[in-house]
Image 1 (spheres, rainbow, N blue to C red):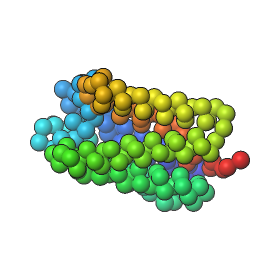
Image 2: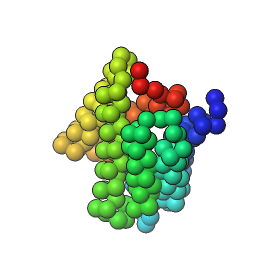
Image 3: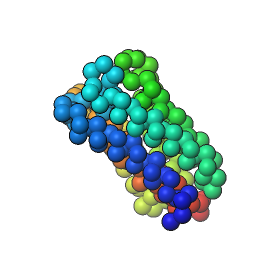
Amino acid sequence: MNVRQFIPIIALLTPLVFILTAIALSGWFNIVDNALSDLGHATRSNVAILFNLGLVIGGFLLYSTALIDSHVEAVYRAIMGFAGFSLALVGVFDEVYGRTHFIVSLIFFVTILSFLIYYSSRTDGWRRNGALAGIVASVASWALHFALKIPPGAAIPELISIFSVAPFYLDVFTEGFKMR
């Protein structure tokens, strides 16, 4: 694996490591009752700086990956570049910013969902089926959360969305994905 293929892995793992570290150090976070962004609330969270820094760095790395991976189809690069930018905005405009935070978070999750939708339209076989399953899982988890408050916090739908797109992001950005 060359350096170019390693950067997307670092871009994916960086915010996840910061999130997991913030969860471990918070002493109060509950995956069922909280949103991940509760960890980044500047006035209520003892781990806000750590959490938000992880999102900003991760967003920068995702954006950078999209810029430097010229071997990847332009639409994938545009979607993931925008996802990286919006992820960084989630860290900058934490929950203290109220509606602005909600909007940039929504933009991030809709953007990664659009990556899955585009991926499923450009692939076949197990790749398409996996992406379609990720779309269904993401949409269903958000629908349950918003319509029925199941679960009460957003962390589970957030993680489902992130882990649904992760393998396909890695497929595109580390394998030198080419259209067949």
